[in-house]
Amino acid sequence: MTLPLWLQIVALVIPAAVAIFSALWASKSARRAQRAEHESARLRALEDRVAQKKYELYQPFLQTLGDMLTPSRNAAATKKLEDVIADFQTFVTVWGSDEVVEAFYRYRTAANSSPPTLVIMRLMADFLVAVRRDVAWPETHILNLHAIGMRINDLAEHPEMVEALAMPLNELFEREKWEAPFDLPSAR
Image 1: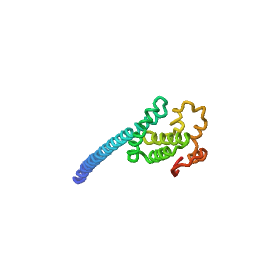
Image 2 (image 1 turned 120 degrees about the horizontal axis):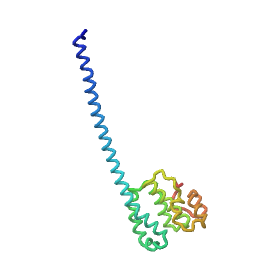
Image 3 (image 1 turned 45 degrees about the vertical axis):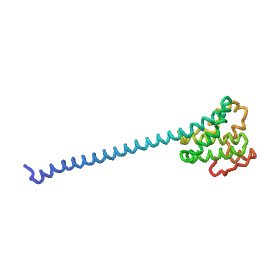
Image 4 (image 1 turned 90 degrees about the vertical axis):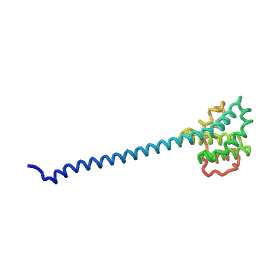
């Protein structure tokens, strides 16, 4: 028994139509995947450029801060600090995260008003942790103590420094009887 001609044609056309539809769908999906891959590569390149800009921005300033905490390098670092800060503050508002800009603002504003040592060290540590989050580790769990404590040779002899690096800023300011020349809207 043979099938009617129209049924034979339908039996041939349906698989051909499914094959054509599948080929078109696969082609469209491949184009989408290729566009997504190109967009992903473009975003990676953009992230790399931003990361390089941030490195170029932060590196001289962080190096100078580190040198200031190193006795054998302190004098040279102090001489160039003003120029390094001027260069840094010109571009940090463009390339720095909100957290970095705020932490730098607090550090810089406080530095102009001769704060107690514990206060300026704490503000510097806040700034260093903010930079760490901005440049490489957004979910960092290191503490201010980790960021700056390694630079203090006799930290074990100064438990007040360890406390200052951990307590809320407003409590530190009260304990040191120092009035901040800035507000603390989002300070930890």
